[in-house]
Length: 585
Image 1 (cartoon, helix red, strand yellow):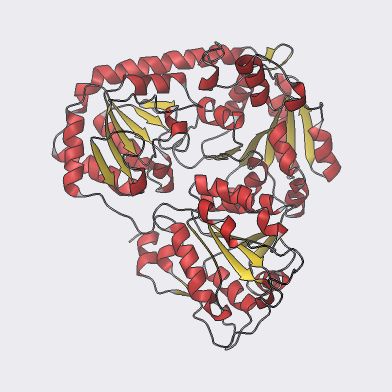
Image 2 (cartoon, helix red, strand yellow; image 1 turned 135 degrees about the horizontal axis):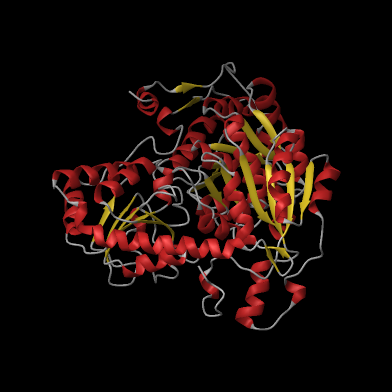
């Protein structure tokens, strides 16, 4: 029996003994600890007594950020890495209004983030209280569940409802507001304070597709001439990369991933093609375009992942497996739609393929053709990467090549949205399958604090590297102090081109009219900023400086910024620039 199965059969996890009539803060702190929380992420004003209980009596370490958004981004990354419900708490009013920017990224990424906040005191509510705001209505569109605690004594069952929603099915964030005058209130009744073992982590309860549907899927696949397996973020959430790789090998068919599905198969695997969509390898889009059959597992077949529904082409025969029934048939006409957990579905598909004696050799010619295309793409990538400089500054393709040389199999890359996500997902070669690449799902600035949260999740076992631009860095650079204070030794690699490069390229190549006031920054030495905080900082202006700088940053044992001055003229592989001839790979 594995650990997950043991969890399912275990008794409920009791909270710590807080006596017959605890305060709400004591009850909340004991519940948070019962869910296995090691950290509580915050920038707080009001719920100080809850934090005191967590830090001083429940051994839940307070992580104090420099903004509510950065604190919750740390919590979000921690949740993505561990799969555990992860708690953040902020004050009511303005504090709560800063939550949406972080909650929405957790929502897009299916992350089990538990966002708590104070709400206006029940005594002064509707009486022009300082910072009064009706908060709960802000959150339903970006959470799986949102509500306000109706009675202090119901903290146990309401928090369990929130956590259950966050980790079950397709995971996602939840929001719970707690009236600020209740935190110090003694409860009239002793609440039921326990955590439910079945909801201590995502994917502990798994849904299997119907066996006849699995058999039909294999029958449909058997009639294909050019099949492809498309793996999405559901494969990563389900930790199903071994099953995905095994099925691909058993069938001998190519694997394309969505951006969120990176890591479903190692990039260096012979059957791996790479990521498709808007931020993609050109070869991956072309293989999806030419396939006549697509087995899509754990993906929403979103606009981003298909480049506005171009890849696969309309008319491609699609078998779609996803845990979210609302995603099935939503963007493509599907030959067969199946509800199911990715790990179970992939194992059942392999079993059905073996039982039906599906011979993967029938697709040998197609697979060999795809492998030839991937090999040609890698040659093109090498060509783009070979010149260290472009117009006197570092070529970002060459920088990615240097990063690839330095990182090892289980290193974790945390990338920002926009260009950083494109570089990380399409160009960096993930050498082992698994959750080794985290990316902002849409909120610029997320990656910088998220890298610190990810490092807290993995501890000393794995190295964590942040990947951001100078535009993204500006959001949360104050959290260098957070990382220094809490001794979180993450190396942040900053691609500094003194601009919002995406906007710069859109102006130059799409609008064909420049507006530097809307895209360009001053040349700032962020390495100097890091050193001013007491962190390690180095500026890199030549390619031979980069890897030695990384080594020194790691040896320092401090949070570090490697400020790499790169050319702003070279965009990563983004489909938007194909018409302008900028997209070469």
